[in-house]
Structure formats: structure tokens, C-alpha cells
Image (tube, rainbow, N blue to C red; front, side, top):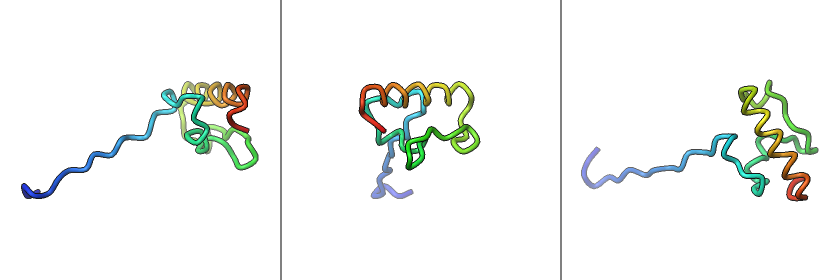
Length: 67
């Protein structure tokens, strides 16, 4: 790499544990078009991460932020 080139840092995607329930856009990877929560088979999450995602999605639904 020459001295004129600059490194661009990209922000890593938040881990499932870090997704706040107030951002339904971030949860779209874990929900179908009809609103069903995807199983671990498709999300490739660990059991602990899947429980956290499920809890976050349900909390968001209760607050009427996502459907």
C-alpha cells in the first residue's frame, strides 16, 4: 500500500445481542416478509443468540415498532 492510499474502515454489523428493539430495520434479517421469526436453521445463530433475537423481536412487537 502506498502512502497516498487510505484505509477505509467499515463499521462491523452489530451482533444479534447488540441489536436494540427500537431499530426494526436491523431485525429484518431475522423475520420473514409475513412477520414470522426465522428459525436457527436459516439464521445460523447459536441457541443463545436466537433466544436474544426472539426476545428483542417480541419486545419490539409489543411496543408496536415492528410487525
